[in-house]
Amino acid sequence: MIEITKRLCVCWLITVSPLGWASCDFTDFPTMSEMKVSGLLNDAQYNSRPMTVRSFSANVSGEEVAGFYRRRWEDAFSESRFGPWQQIGTLADECFFTVQYGEAGGNAFGRLLISVVPSGESNAPLGQGVVKPSDGVVVSDLLTNDGPKEGRVTVISSEQTVSEVASFYQTEMTVDGWGLDQHFAERGGVVLVFRKGTDENNIVIMPAGDATQILVNEVEIN
Image 1 (cartoon, one colour):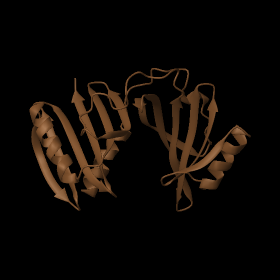
Image 2 (cartoon, one colour):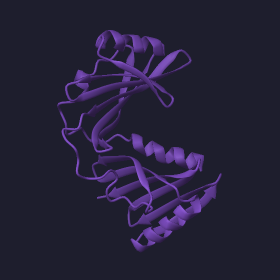
Image 3 (cartoon, rainbow, N blue to C red):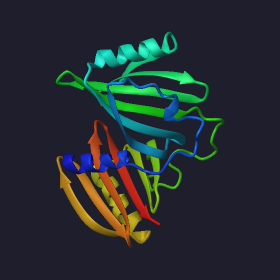
Protein backbone atom coordinates (compact mmCIF):
# COMPACT_ATOMS: atom_id res chain seq x y z
CA MET A 1 0.00 0.00 0.00
CA ILE A 2 2.95 2.31 0.59
CA GLU A 3 3.82 2.19 -3.13
CA ILE A 4 0.18 2.92 -4.07
CA THR A 5 0.17 5.88 -1.69
CA LYS A 6 3.36 7.24 -3.25
CA ARG A 7 1.88 6.82 -6.74
CA LEU A 8 -1.28 8.66 -5.77
CA CYS A 9 0.62 11.46 -4.10
CA VAL A 10 2.58 12.01 -7.32
CA CYS A 11 -0.75 13.10 -8.82
CA TRP A 12 -0.34 16.27 -6.75
CA LEU A 13 2.63 17.17 -8.91
CA ILE A 14 1.31 17.14 -12.47
CA THR A 15 2.07 19.70 -15.16
CA VAL A 16 -1.00 21.64 -16.17
CA SER A 17 -2.08 24.84 -17.92
CA PRO A 18 -0.79 28.39 -17.15
CA LEU A 19 -1.93 30.35 -14.13
CA GLY A 20 -4.87 32.68 -14.24
CA TRP A 21 -3.30 35.09 -11.71
CA ALA A 22 -0.64 36.93 -13.68
CA SER A 23 0.23 39.33 -10.80
CA CYS A 24 2.14 36.49 -9.11
CA ASP A 25 4.47 34.69 -11.51
CA PHE A 26 7.99 33.39 -11.85
CA THR A 27 9.28 36.51 -13.60
CA ASP A 28 9.51 37.96 -10.07
CA PHE A 29 11.08 34.85 -8.52
CA PRO A 30 14.90 35.14 -8.40
CA THR A 31 16.85 32.00 -9.29
CA MET A 32 20.53 31.06 -9.16
CA SER A 33 22.42 30.72 -12.44
CA GLU A 34 23.32 27.18 -11.35
CA MET A 35 19.66 26.15 -11.07
CA LYS A 36 17.99 23.93 -13.65
CA VAL A 37 14.29 24.73 -13.27
CA SER A 38 11.31 22.86 -14.72
CA GLY A 39 7.53 23.15 -14.41
CA LEU A 40 5.78 21.02 -11.86
CA LEU A 41 2.34 22.33 -10.85
CA ASN A 42 0.34 25.25 -12.27
CA ASP A 43 -3.25 26.50 -12.34
CA ALA A 44 -4.00 24.83 -9.01
CA GLN A 45 -5.71 25.72 -5.77
CA TYR A 46 -4.41 24.48 -2.44
CA ASN A 47 -6.85 25.03 0.43
CA SER A 48 -8.69 27.58 -1.74
CA ARG A 49 -5.48 29.49 -2.46
CA PRO A 50 -4.01 29.70 -6.00
CA MET A 51 -0.59 28.06 -6.17
CA THR A 52 2.09 27.11 -8.67
CA VAL A 53 5.25 25.04 -8.20
CA ARG A 54 8.46 24.47 -10.12
CA SER A 55 11.22 21.99 -9.34
CA PHE A 56 14.94 22.69 -9.43
CA SER A 57 18.32 21.04 -9.15
CA ALA A 58 21.66 22.78 -8.77
CA ASN A 59 25.31 21.83 -8.58
CA VAL A 60 25.70 23.72 -5.29
CA SER A 61 25.02 22.90 -1.65
CA GLY A 62 21.73 23.51 0.12
CA GLU A 63 23.42 26.13 2.29
CA GLU A 64 24.54 27.99 -0.83
CA VAL A 65 20.93 28.03 -2.04
CA ALA A 66 19.78 29.43 1.31
CA GLY A 67 22.59 32.01 1.28
CA PHE A 68 21.58 33.22 -2.17
CA TYR A 69 18.00 33.91 -1.04
CA ARG A 70 19.09 35.46 2.25
CA ARG A 71 21.09 37.99 0.26
CA ARG A 72 18.37 38.61 -2.33
CA TRP A 73 15.58 39.00 0.19
CA GLU A 74 17.78 40.75 2.79
CA ASP A 75 15.89 41.10 6.09
CA ALA A 76 12.46 40.31 4.60
CA PHE A 77 12.54 36.53 4.83
CA SER A 78 11.74 33.71 7.22
CA GLU A 79 13.24 30.23 7.51
CA SER A 80 11.67 27.02 8.82
CA ARG A 81 11.44 23.29 8.26
CA PHE A 82 8.52 21.62 6.45
CA GLY A 83 8.59 17.83 6.53
CA PRO A 84 11.82 16.74 4.80
CA TRP A 85 12.48 20.22 3.44
CA GLN A 86 14.36 23.22 4.73
CA GLN A 87 12.57 26.30 3.46
CA ILE A 88 13.06 30.02 3.11
CA GLY A 89 10.41 32.46 1.94
CA THR A 90 9.34 36.04 1.58
CA LEU A 91 6.14 38.06 1.07
CA ALA A 92 5.93 40.59 -1.74
CA ASP A 93 2.61 42.42 -1.98
CA GLU A 94 -0.01 39.63 -2.32
CA CYS A 95 2.50 36.94 -3.30
CA PHE A 96 4.27 34.35 -1.12
CA PHE A 97 7.57 33.13 -2.61
CA THR A 98 8.96 29.99 -0.96
CA VAL A 99 12.02 27.85 -1.66
CA GLN A 100 11.99 24.30 -0.28
CA TYR A 101 15.35 22.59 -0.60
CA GLY A 102 17.29 19.47 0.26
CA GLU A 103 20.69 18.05 -0.64
CA ALA A 104 22.00 14.75 -1.97
CA GLY A 105 25.60 14.00 -2.89
CA GLY A 106 26.54 17.63 -2.37
CA ASN A 107 23.97 18.86 -4.91
CA ALA A 108 20.86 20.84 -3.98
CA PHE A 109 17.38 20.07 -5.23
CA GLY A 110 13.91 21.24 -4.30
CA ARG A 111 10.89 23.29 -5.22
CA LEU A 112 10.02 26.92 -5.89
CA LEU A 113 6.48 27.77 -4.80
CA ILE A 114 4.27 30.79 -5.35
CA SER A 115 0.96 31.21 -3.54
CA VAL A 116 -1.40 34.14 -3.22
CA VAL A 117 -2.61 35.90 -0.10
CA PRO A 118 -6.41 35.50 -0.10
CA SER A 119 -8.22 38.74 -0.94
CA GLY A 120 -11.05 37.88 1.46
CA GLU A 121 -12.64 35.09 3.42
CA SER A 122 -14.17 32.35 1.30
CA ASN A 123 -17.75 31.37 2.10
CA ALA A 124 -17.14 27.86 0.81
CA PRO A 125 -15.94 25.40 3.45
CA LEU A 126 -12.68 23.58 2.81
CA GLY A 127 -13.29 20.38 0.87
CA GLN A 128 -16.79 21.37 -0.22
CA GLY A 129 -18.50 18.56 -2.11
CA VAL A 130 -15.99 15.84 -1.26
CA VAL A 131 -17.43 12.59 0.10
CA LYS A 132 -16.32 12.15 3.72
CA PRO A 133 -17.45 10.42 6.92
CA SER A 134 -19.78 12.34 9.23
CA ASP A 135 -16.92 13.16 11.60
CA GLY A 136 -14.40 13.73 8.81
CA VAL A 137 -12.25 16.86 9.02
CA VAL A 138 -10.66 18.12 5.79
CA VAL A 139 -6.97 18.74 6.40
CA SER A 140 -6.03 19.85 2.88
CA ASP A 141 -7.67 20.17 -0.51
CA LEU A 142 -5.82 20.53 -3.82
CA LEU A 143 -7.60 21.13 -7.15
CA THR A 144 -5.85 21.08 -10.53
CA ASN A 145 -6.91 21.63 -14.14
CA ASP A 146 -5.09 19.93 -17.00
CA GLY A 147 -7.18 20.70 -20.07
CA PRO A 148 -9.55 17.73 -20.43
CA LYS A 149 -8.63 16.47 -16.94
CA GLU A 150 -9.68 17.93 -13.62
CA GLY A 151 -7.99 16.56 -10.53
CA ARG A 152 -8.59 16.81 -6.82
CA VAL A 153 -6.57 15.42 -3.91
CA THR A 154 -8.17 15.75 -0.49
CA VAL A 155 -6.74 14.64 2.84
CA ILE A 156 -9.30 13.92 5.57
CA SER A 157 -8.97 12.87 9.21
CA SER A 158 -11.58 10.74 10.97
CA GLU A 159 -11.93 9.20 14.43
CA GLN A 160 -13.55 6.10 12.93
CA THR A 161 -11.57 2.91 12.35
CA VAL A 162 -10.05 1.97 9.01
CA SER A 163 -12.68 -0.74 8.47
CA GLU A 164 -15.54 1.63 9.35
CA VAL A 165 -14.24 4.26 6.92
CA ALA A 166 -13.74 1.66 4.17
CA SER A 167 -17.30 0.39 4.66
CA PHE A 168 -18.59 3.97 4.50
CA TYR A 169 -16.90 4.66 1.17
CA GLN A 170 -17.97 1.38 -0.39
CA THR A 171 -21.59 2.19 0.45
CA GLU A 172 -21.57 5.89 -0.43
CA MET A 173 -19.65 5.54 -3.68
CA THR A 174 -21.86 2.68 -4.87
CA VAL A 175 -24.98 4.72 -4.16
CA ASP A 176 -23.44 7.56 -6.17
CA GLY A 177 -23.00 5.29 -9.20
CA TRP A 178 -19.33 4.38 -8.82
CA GLY A 179 -18.16 0.81 -9.43
CA LEU A 180 -15.50 -0.73 -7.20
CA ASP A 181 -12.58 -1.68 -9.47
CA GLN A 182 -9.96 -2.66 -6.87
CA HIS A 183 -10.01 -3.32 -3.13
CA PHE A 184 -7.06 -4.56 -1.14
CA ALA A 185 -5.60 -4.23 2.34
CA GLU A 186 -2.01 -4.05 3.50
CA ARG A 187 -0.18 -3.00 6.70
CA GLY A 188 -3.42 -2.11 8.45
CA GLY A 189 -4.68 0.14 5.67
CA VAL A 190 -7.11 -0.16 2.78
CA VAL A 191 -6.98 1.00 -0.84
CA LEU A 192 -10.22 1.41 -2.82
CA VAL A 193 -10.27 2.24 -6.54
CA PHE A 194 -13.61 3.30 -8.01
CA ARG A 195 -14.55 4.03 -11.61
CA LYS A 196 -17.49 5.75 -13.26
CA GLY A 197 -17.11 5.82 -17.03
CA THR A 198 -13.74 7.42 -17.74
CA ASP A 199 -13.54 9.01 -14.27
CA GLU A 200 -11.48 7.44 -11.49
CA ASN A 201 -11.49 7.86 -7.72
CA ASN A 202 -8.68 6.38 -5.61
CA ILE A 203 -9.16 6.28 -1.84
CA VAL A 204 -6.31 5.35 0.49
CA ILE A 205 -7.31 4.78 4.13
CA MET A 206 -4.51 4.52 6.70
CA PRO A 207 -4.25 4.33 10.49
CA ALA A 208 -2.67 7.46 11.98
CA GLY A 209 -2.25 7.06 15.72
CA ASP A 210 -5.66 7.22 17.37
CA ALA A 211 -7.26 8.50 14.15
CA THR A 212 -7.61 7.43 10.52
CA GLN A 213 -6.20 9.39 7.60
CA ILE A 214 -7.99 9.33 4.26
CA LEU A 215 -6.49 10.41 0.94
CA VAL A 216 -9.09 10.88 -1.81
CA ASN A 217 -7.68 11.32 -5.32
CA GLU A 218 -10.29 12.18 -7.97
CA VAL A 219 -9.61 12.42 -11.71
CA GLU A 220 -12.44 13.60 -13.95
CA ILE A 221 -12.23 13.55 -17.76
CA ASN A 222 -14.27 16.34 -19.34
